Structures are given as C-alpha cells and as structure tokens.
Length: 236
Image (cartoon, rainbow, N blue to C red; front, side, top):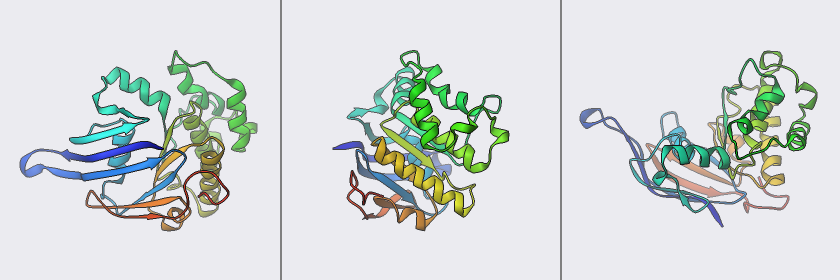
C-alpha cells in the first residue's frame, strides 16, 4: 500500500529570466513502512522535494497524496493540522527550543494540537528507546550533538506520524554518532512502522535503506531497490 504518491510534480521559483526549475515532473510512490534515501548533489532539489511532501511549500504543478489525501487542495489551516498529525520532521540543526528541557521539547508538538492528549507513557517509552530518558531534564545546551538529535527524533515521533521526513539528520554529527542515529531511525521505522524519507549526501548511509532515489537537476535520474521495504529483519 502506498502511503505517499507524487504525480508529475514540478516546482518553479522566480519568473521569466529569473525562473529556476527546482523540480521537474517528479512521479514516485512510497510504501507504508519503507525507508527511502533521497540522494543527489547540492542544489539538485532534494530539500525542495521534502518541503513539498511535508506541506511546507506547494508544487507549481502536479499533485501530492499523503494517506490518499491530496494535500495541495487543503486550506492553510487544514493543512497545518494535517501536517502536525501525520508528518514528522528531523532537521540537520536539531531545531530544539533552548529554553525547554529535553522532555518538554519532545512534548511540544502535542501542546499545539488541541485534539491530542499528552501520552506521558509514550514519551517515556520514546526517550528510553532512544537512550536519553536520564537526560529528560537537561536543556539543549547541556546535551551533546547526538543527544540533541535523539531528542529531535523523539519529538518527530511523538505524534506517531504517518511519514517522517529527515533532511541530512546526521550532517552535524561525527561518524560514530552518525551510525547510532541511523540505527535509531531504522529501529523506529520497524518498531513504529514509520515511513521515512531521508535526504543524505552520504552514499554509505543510503546503502543501508530500503530504496535509493537519485535526483539531479530536479529530476529523478535513477532508483534502486535494496531491501523488501516492510517488516522482517532484512529491512534497512
């Protein structure tokens, strides 16, 4: 079952002689529980693709479906609610709130959504699973880069989103911590049946995922299936 589908998606910035085609006729499907790596050179359109899927921007042409819903037709208010409940984000720079401790950073998305209750048992489960329960009262400035990224991952998962979007999540981490964080994403993908789209420039990391999608000049130039995609010990 496809949880995400893009149909002939294009994104154009600027006008006339200043026009830039960031994405050109992108069509692809992602299955539920699949871990997909998006790779390509700088400026190839990887982050633009993630922004469109996440509803942070709208395509110039084409349609994007998340859980069968065409997200471009929603009002801004409805899209914000849909995004909050169905899509999680993990960024390279962590984007944690400095005046909140680790626990409150994780719980923050739930406080924005009046339709959600704060499941403290689930938050504890996430923090223990990610190895940072003992750091729950620490502020971001008191955490290492790897610990901050773990908090960011927990925050992205706390709403149990259908899709997790990760934009260079290990870009600021050393090699050892990178291995740990990718391992945590894989574990989360399997345990919580998370569908993950991850932008990365690291080919070795991409090789561990279910599928690699290569983007150059705004176009999908190649796709490679590496694993079956859902369930089982061989997934990503």
